[in-house]
Length: 305
Image 1 (spheres, rainbow, N blue to C red):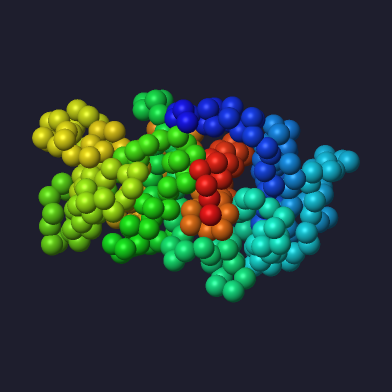
Image 2 (spheres, helix red, strand yellow):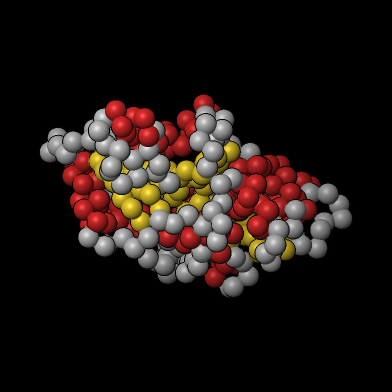
């Protein structure tokens, strides 16, 4: 498979694949309607179910309503999320997208042990970015689910990305375990986790991955910085596909900096559930929602589930 280097590459490939069935939790916002209409018009989705107030949602879409778009009545945010998850569990959707509801209600419905979409022990969020300064795709995790992942959770966060990178045609996946320093220090437990993950990978515990760490952000993305620091031989140094951060604060800040200061096109997706789950910010543009759907298509291409 040819490696995808941009969202345009993903869109071009998606046009050659069968369209997806999308379920949106909370469709009562203009930006949601705009994104949904674009997805339908581009042939990326074959049908869409939106939960929320049918009257409000109907006013946001052109009349007559497209046959591909249907509404399922639901009240508050929790009800919208639960109704959307139920549609997925009924086998009527391939991808779940967060609409105009809060993340807490949305994720609570997704992770519910009895009625949710759990597949494994760990769900994790990843943001994929395309920046003019880089010329390829790069990803950051976990910037949306786990506040301070422990070492075992970090292992699963990496493994959760397997279908995504397989679908992106990227192999091996070069993972930089980002820390404040390249030296292992008891004062910075994340550095010990980084060294342990790198060692386990070298011993064959992460098939399809090359893991290096601990390393600073500069070493992860700049071959020059890696050479200056004498770390050019460290796996992933200067060429990381995936940046694994020590906590949600660091990952979230970097992903948002890419958007606002790196002129990045971005998309985000939650991995580790029964289907791809899109955890959009309510302030995200329609374009970012489309990019998330393209990542979901890549996950399905790579063998979700």
